[in-house]
Length: 188
Image 1: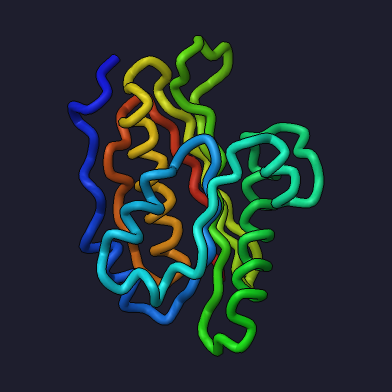
Image 2 (image 1 turned 90 degrees about the vertical axis):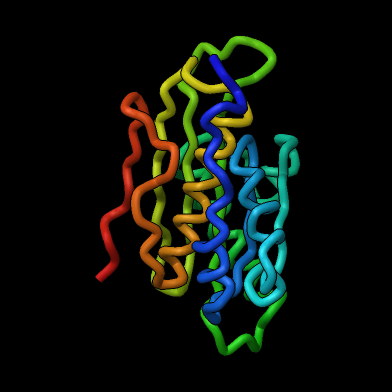
């Protein structure tokens, strides 16, 4: 298992295109996808896009965010609840925005300092005025180290935000033959 070799670089051009839109968001990540927040903030124009970014890493922080204890921290339901909470926060932070507001959330189970019996996986959800969409990513366990898994999830977070901004993100950078990405159906 390697960690840094093959880690895809931040999608700076895509992020610049996101920042050029009117969309504003609150981003919430736990367990993985953390690099996405750093990437988004490192490109000029971030203050037009990011209202807030949080990392509710403790179980109690996640429970407080979504208003109940999740039955499973890394699940579609939890990611969707997180995205709804993030959208609600965006609406409170910018109530008179007059621009699209979105909540973006990621929850993940990645490489740890102790063996994991379950799958390495991530759920990324986006909530907006049209509903919630969720992507599921099953990672090829044992193929990557923590940094590389986080980078892949972070690319998915940025791609999901790009889609919410009306930008086609293209193929997910870093996706390998043993990884399985399930994307939501396009909105009509």
